[in-house]
Image 1 (cartoon, one colour):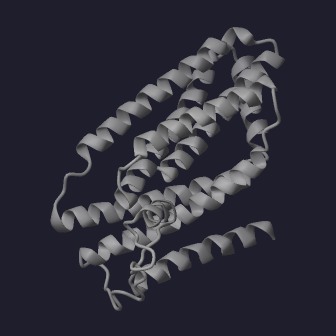
Image 2 (cartoon, helix red, strand yellow; image 1 turned 90 degrees about the horizontal axis):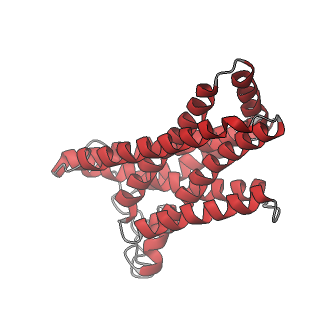
Amino acid sequence: MFAALIITLRETLEVALVVGIVLAYLKKTINGKHQSFVWGGLFAGVVVSALIAYVFEKYFGGFEGTAEQIYEGVAMFTAAALLSWMILWMLEQRRKIKEELEKKVSVHIEKDHPIGLLSLVFVSTLREGVETSIFLKAAILSGGSDGTVLGAVSGILIALAVSYVLFKGFARVPLKTFFTITSVILILFAAGLFAHGIHEFQEAGVFPIYIEHLWDINNFLDENGSFGGVMKGVFGYNGNPSLLEVVGYFGYLVLIAFYSFLRKK
């Protein structure tokens, strides 16, 4: 549930920021007449995202045996890669997002091309929607479906409330802190997905096992228990991981930390 909440909270807020920046720029430049194209792009992006999510859920999966394990492993690796790309891209571009968006909006206005505004918002919304579908599917495969719908809906509602407060100017929202905290949580979530993908490939016989259980502390903190289940769903906790899973989990975190260090130099 918590993983789903963080995913939809983050993705919905990113869409809201795009829409808010575009609307604010239109208002500032006295081009409010084009607002309907922005809302049209948002609506279209949400609808198409929902359709893609439905197709993804209905027609991808349902495998059995080795095929199911390989499918789940690929899904985990794909979600981990997309999450990593999204977070690292956001960290690099967040200072320029507002400037770049306003520049694109300005071009569309100067060319009297309001459909371009619709397309800009539509693509941004669709991208976040597709990412959300993939991440939620991976979260379900990793930690189970209990509370996923409630968590996802809660995340969306919280993001909408925060966006309303932010753009109405009722209070200052520390977005930099928010994105930093959620980035750390999602990086840990991605590390868990990567390790879980290794686990699925080991079960399918694609990866070697070497040491099946490097340790076993399920009698102390059961991965299927109340707290252990939350840790498993959010951070990829495994009470009895294999050697390769542990190496993959911490190796992933080391690579992300190393990349972040190089980026700051």
